Length: 483
Image (cartoon, rainbow, N blue to C red; front, side):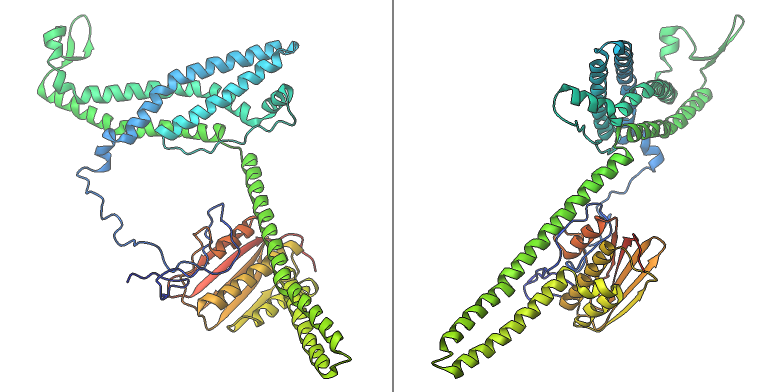
């Protein structure tokens, strides 16, 4: 029977992963936040590369015939005619629009030209992706403030992406001319000289010359016509041919920079998209917390209070006829009240514990550590308190990690360390359990924690080899410190 590792690398009876409770979420930025959920990597690195064929030629000799070189060559050759079209169109539309600005017609002409430049930019990104393997994300979309043609034209004219695409169309033409000329000259010279021994017979037979002419005047001429000179020519051609892929690659590096810098999203736009994604994570997390609180109230304290009311009603009815039974029922109701109060305290602690508000992280983390199933050493080294939001996220992060240790680690001891490093609040939770923590899966609990931390520019890093120990480090921005 095939088996797999469970949460911390141990085998379970069914050979399946034992998922655990935790915040659900995704690490949208791909940071190293791995949660308890997989006890090792799927597959093995031992056989990596076993299927690779042994290459007969070194990379320098194979490169002129490689598919990558030919794709880059095609990219350079296509750049000149495409750039001519883009340059001509862009300059014409911008000049026409600027000239017509004295009338109302200039604005729609400029807007139409810039919109077409955005379309050309999308085509150039696709060409770079297909031929250069360059993945450039699409820039932020237009966001008109309102409906109608005027709102759309205003959005186009105010968009930095539109003007960067137009700038690309203008700047790329001179570079395309240079790269096209260099590439064609080097490539044709290299292959022409390399294959010279094959077509040397063309010159004396059909052109009436002794071969490639190096020098000639009225008195004498020098031709490459003897075996030594032909061999040297072929050797020089070989060297040029071998150097051509690297020259073309250097030229296309500039194209990559132009495409990435002018046709991709701006840093500000990328930051806006990231913040929108983080806001979505925060909203989803808050909604999940509200559903959890509602479920806990409905299934716990509310149901217990309803039963309590029924018991007290029955005791009231029996108070005159059977005082002893009524007293017993009141006693049972008193016990139910205590249990309901304890459930409400636990629920309030899960929302935001009073000890955290009154005494800070040190006391709050010591309280949550005392409820862990393994001994936990808590060390909080903070001269002042962080902002309330950061303090709350830090508390719930440590609380969730300690719950995972209690449920899945099999540890004998654990530790929690909190300190400040410049403008970052550092949290580290370690245990001597069996290890194997991994949050790469979208449904693991620590992936959800990583998403929460990412929503406030935090980072979650896990070091948990199979067999242990496990060390989980969280970084949070230090904001709004208070004494």
